Length: 93
Image: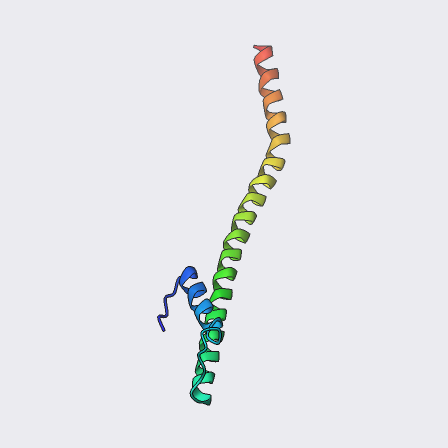
C-alpha cells in the first residue's frame, strides 16, 4: 500500500475495503482477514490524521484572527487619543 495517499485516495481505498463483502468476496484464511482489518484500521488512522491536520490549520487561522482583533481593540483608544492630540496641536498653530 502506498504510504503517501491523499484524502481522496484514502476515501476510495476505504470504500473498496468496506464494500469487500458486497461483491461476494471472502477471506481465504484468518491471516487474510487480519490483513484486511489491519489495512482498514490503517486507512481510518490516516483519514483521522488528515482531519486533525485540517483542524490544526483552522485553529492557527482562528488564533491569527483573534490576535488581529485584539490588537485592533487595543489600538483604537490610543489612536483616538493620538489623533485628538494632533488635532489640538494643529489648532494651536
